[in-house]
Amino acid sequence: MKGVILAGGLGKRLRPLTLVTNKHLLPVYDRPMIYYPIECLLNAGIDEILIVTGGEHAGDFLKLLKNGKDLGVRHLEYAYQEGEGGIADALKLAEEFADGGKVCVILGDNLIEGNIRKAVGDFFTQKAGAKVLLKEVEDPERFGVVRMEGNRVVEIVEKPADPPSNLAVTGIYFYDQDVFGICQTLKPSGRGELEITDVNNAYLQRGDLTYEVLEGWWTDAGTFESLHRASCWVAEGGANHLDMMGRASRPATVKY
Image (cartoon, rainbow, N blue to C red):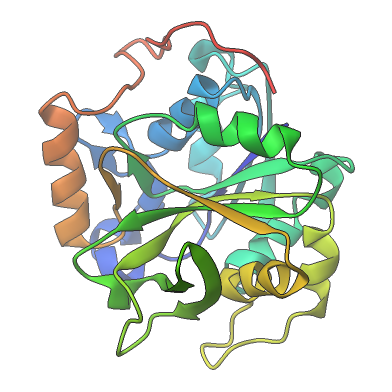
């Protein structure tokens, strides 16, 4: 399985910081934000990674990460997203990289306390379809939120004014090769973007979307409040991360 990190966008909610660099290169405590989704994939045994970025600061990723070898990445590629077409639009750029296989997709501003090894292994053996990771949050109106009937997800609602639950879809997704065909069928939302929630609902309607609830804390870092929260949690030692020299401080894992 290969990993895709989506690190585009203009980071408007973090201006003026993002006037001089990409949001995903801002510091979370003592490391660039992009280190954390990379480490999340490496901890799960995924060491072939594509970073999709955009904007005028895209070249800064190459200055920081180079070919990824210092971080433990076996193969690192980059793709450039024109404009702001949304998460699903950025994901379309990963089709050639995926090469017909399954992918684990992570939004570049997502941080977790634990790891996703179990979810990766479960999806590796899942015959087809998609998987999302859920987490209870205090502000579900900021996210895609699931409506449950018993233990079954029946709908995912994007940024609902009246959330049907407090279970948010985190920015960690698993897809089979059909995701790229689904992305091609999407129409822009009212925001003018191709929404990842529409992708997940397409799999849900097909009946092959599974889910797991993420253990430990999870946060995005796309606002000043959540960026501060992420830095505090990491400073308290609640996340496995790369050391100052970029070497992965993690146990050996099975590759998927």
